Every structure is written in C-alpha cells, then in structure tokens.
Amino acid sequence: AIGSIGSLFLSDERCKDKIEAIDNALETLRELQPVSFYYNSEYSATPERLHHGFIAQQYKEVMPDATYYDSSKELYCIDTNDLIALLVRAVQQLELKIGNLEAVGGLRRTMNFSLGGK
Image (tube, rainbow, N blue to C red; front, side, top):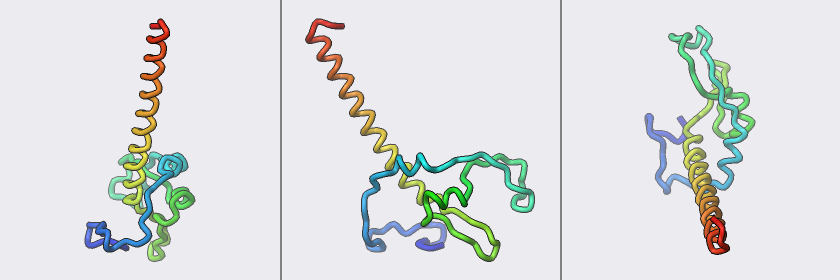
C-alpha cells in the first residue's frame, strides 16, 4: 500500500510535505453517504453478514485521493484510513461549537438573572 509499512502507515513528519490543518471536516463528512449492505456471494465467504460502509463510486466524488481502482479485479476500492483524521477533526469542531453554545447560554442566564429574570 502507498505510504505504508506492512499494516502500519507512515506518520512521521519527516515523510510529509505541504502539511496543512483540516478546516472543513464537517463539510466533507456531510457529503459522504454511509450505507449498509451485504456483499455479493462471489466477493464474500459470509454473504449473510451485514456491513456498514460506503460505495466507492460515491466516495470518489467526495474523497478522490482516498479512492483507488484495482485494475486486476476491475473494482473500485477506498482507503478508510484517511477518514480517521476527518472524524477526529469533526469531533474537535463540534466540541468547539458546543462550547460556544454553552457560553452563549451561560451569558443569557447571567443577563436574565441580573435583569431580575429567572
């Protein structure tokens, strides 16, 4: 796999170039279309097992650099490892939004109390 050593992915800063913070994680995640599905029997030893994931052709529209075409099998594949950083960043962004909302709520309560409200 590209950027990997066995099942480990290279993460050392010395291996990377043009490093930028992820600013639009929530927007990117909103565009993804998670689905549940069963694999066709020719692609699975357990076709009765329910899976959760994505359709590569749809995923490619949102995250083209994490979508690959396996010409030997003539199938599209996705690298969900790229999704991990987006999920972490989205949680961080949501945490910030929640903190801001809580601060606004606290300010409103303080203002109501000081104005003689409940």
